Length: 227
Ligand SMILES: NC(=O)C1=CN([C@@H]2O[C@H](COP(=O)(O)OP(=O)(O)OC[C@H]3O[C@@H](n4cnc5c(N)ncnc54)[C@H](O)[C@@H]3O)[C@@H](O)[C@H]2O)C=CC1
Ligand SMILES: O=C(CO)COP(=O)(O)O
Image (tube, rainbow, N blue to C red):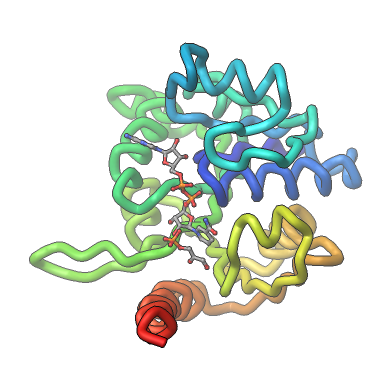
């Protein structure tokens, strides 16, 4: 039985958690219906965002006005978020990825790596846009994730705008995979009648196109702004 965590609770993470939670209940023999939702600790008007999400079923900070299914359980406790989790959706802004992965590795492997052999987490998909650039080299986000987590990662990317998808406006996306059986599972979790998912065996191609698309998008925005 697979158990799913959505790690990251921004605009896109919240939209992804809603879709997954609606889909996951259709496959009771394959997936545990509870989706854990890792929320970076945050105070909103004197209250923890996790408490607000669990009580009102709405992420008032990052996706106000859209209800989140009750099988999404928000937490800022990493141990609770990743307990028994076999499949993880990574959806934090790229600048927080390194710190997030350190926290995840500490949790699943133990501070000295002592639990690494008993890892339950086997499947990871990145919804993150961007590239990691250092003085030495350039890596795609999944290459960075694979190097840090030692798990082959899939990617989901496209010309996708979270609030449009949350509003059930039609949109298409692509999953890049290393393993077809795993890709079929991610497709079950993400596809809806308004969010069409295609799968291709080219992880790096999908994520590089997704990242480059945003350079074009910025250019179009500037051109539009100039009239
Ligand atoms: N919003 C969109 O329409 C789309 C976003 N993406 C990509 O998804 C990724 C996530 O984007 P969004 O969900 O839009 O993010 P967002 O900008 O809406 O949310 C910010 C996120 O960062 C977390 N955060 C804030 N401070 C932090 C810290 N110090 N440490 C760790 N986490 C912290 C927040 O809890 C929240 O989850 C990005 O790579 C973005 O490019 C991809 C497609 C669509
Ligand atoms: O790629 C996006 C929409 O398709 C959004 O990316 P940012 O959230 O990084 O601007």
